[in-house]
Image (cartoon, rainbow, N blue to C red; front, side):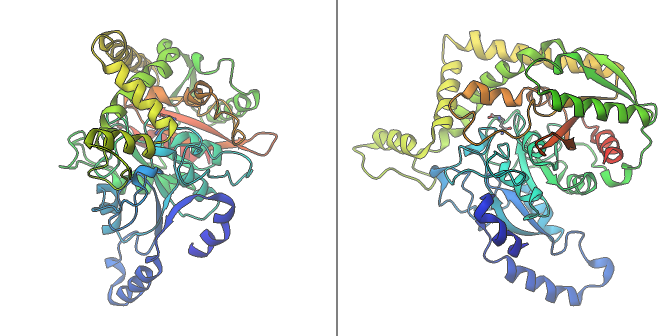
Amino acid sequence: ILKRIEETEEKLNAYITVNEKAEEEAKKKDEELTKLSEDEIPVLFGIPMSIKDNINVVGQKMTCASKMLKDFIAPYDATVIKKLREKGAIFIGKNNLDEFAMGSSTETSYFGVTHNPWDLERVPGGSSGGSAAAVAARSAIASLGSDTGGSIRQPCSLCGVVGIKPTYGRVSRYGLTAFASSLDQIGPITKNVEDNAFLLSLISGLDAKDATSAKLPVPDYTKTLDNNIKGLKAGLPKEYFIEGIEPEVKEKIMETVKHLESLGVEIEEISLPHTSYAVETYYIIAPAEASSNLGRFDGVRYTYRAENYTDLVDMYCKTRAEGFGNEVKRRIMIGTYTLSAGYYDAYYLKAQKVRTLIYQDFQKAFEKVDFIVTPVSPTTAFKIGEKTDDPIKMYLSDIFTIALNLAGLPGLSMPCGFDSKGLPVGIQLIGKAFDEETLYAVGYKLE
Ligand code: GLN
């Protein structure tokens, strides 16, 4: 893998940091191996994993792709990392992302753009673009990403790999740099559904360090991959096949739907009427939470601090002005505005109410169907620079992924074909809360 990283990085820029000690760690594992009997070998023994650079891996840099944290060394392991380390994984490097995971193209990183391995002039999607590009280019076996509004699923779709945004509370967020705490979830990015199911089983579960992690047993998702899907009901939301979606994307989704029918799945049209408000609702709630979460980057506790300042307040201001990029500043300003006295009721509170309506839409739909099928992204990978001048255009890339985060539901993103340019198209399977099993069982049959 290290060799593959060397071969591909010049073109891709999928990594911010490569772990220099990885080879040494692997050699140590080789020695350990001689002392272990076969049934003592942990399931990930010696497997190199790469990790999105907003998750803490002790002793390695954790930059969030921001100047603000460019020299920050993680002081502890995130819970997901601790769990994988106990199973023997080696953490080979940290993947590029949009600064603080805010974006859909990995173009806002302080460390430069990541390129899509299918077409180097195009974006890999985002914000977990480095992770998805590395898995697609085989410079990673598997990676962990984070998803607040689509950041695992959309890059997986644009790079032709598999990713899941688990149910909110399935995976501990301890050690993930908070963007919007009521929406963030960590999930695996892999080459296929089986690897994904395997890794999700390993990282899930209740964690005393994250009060929002769910007190529910963790299934071994690989055991139910073969579950019968005949007779299951799939919903096709009519609001998701609207204008703006590329005809070729729609065509591939409909072909997959036919395939599902041939496997015995019943297809039913459903309605999620508040979908059209999902993007607006998200862009009030997520920036509001972000403006609060990012308050901690003040030049005192973390690595970056402005050099020339007159007093403490001036130091805060200059540090934040210099340390954050434009997109992050935009979010902090929107969030501060919508939370301020006088505007709170008009924006934040209203958005919370619409969030409930979006949740109820899904509840109602799941009275009739077992899972929902939609596109992941309205387009295949777009050109680098194509949407950077127009934040609204960029925000609309998440139109199919965002509602799930607001409702807390799981979504699996997996490849379902290619467009005529040879770019991968992805399909999204949305499940009931904590029913990742069904998504994996269906996804497994579609591969
Ligand atoms: N693209 C969305 C945003 O910019 C979602 C990001 C994410 O899921 N982290 O906020």
